Every structure is written in C-alpha cells, then in structure tokens.
Length: 124
Image (cartoon, rainbow, N blue to C red):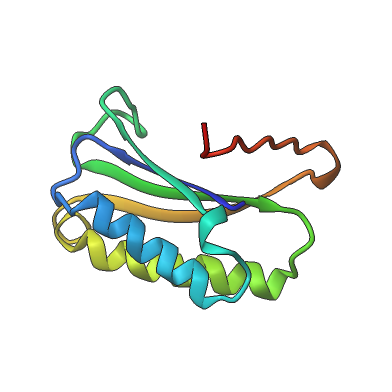
C-alpha cells in the first residue's frame, strides 16, 4: 500500500517518460515517511475513449488517484496530494499551456478491515 493510479486522456500533448514519472511519484511518496518502497504499486492508464463536457477536443485531463489504508490525518493527506500535484504539473506543462487541461489528485481511503492481501514467494 499505497496504490497509485495515473490516468490521462489521449489528447494530452506532453509525452513524458512514464516510468520516470512513476519513479518520481514513488520518491515523493517515500519522502513523506508514510510508506515502504516495496509496498508502493503504481500504474498508468491512457484513455482513448473519453468525454469531457460537450466533447470539445481542447478539453483534457490527467488524474492521479492514491489509494491508501484508512487512518492518516487530513494534514498528511493534504501534503501528499499537494506534492503529487506539483510533480504532475511539472510533467505536463505543454498540455496545461495549450489545452484546457485539468490535473487532479485525489486520495481514497481503503477500508482497513476488509482489505485483503496475499504476497507470493519469489523462491521456487
């Protein structure tokens, strides 16, 4: 934990190195002191089919959802969201300048009592 899901619309102008961006996100999360590196799981999803408002092709989005086990304070969550948004803004400058691009970050608590996890062994 946490799970970081980065989604973006296919009309985004910038083409960042997504692996490098995910590494930056992992570093940002580690700097918070809230997580163990091996527990951070991230992925990127490009949306070919999307609709924003009336379908104007100048409308675009980048959104990051950070799912984490419940129990952290609002101050910690706010700091995480702000730090992640700064990284995303830095990664998509052309889209922000040339499109009506919305960059959002949201944190979602995972219900601790119902979260299930099984980790397999790396040895045969």
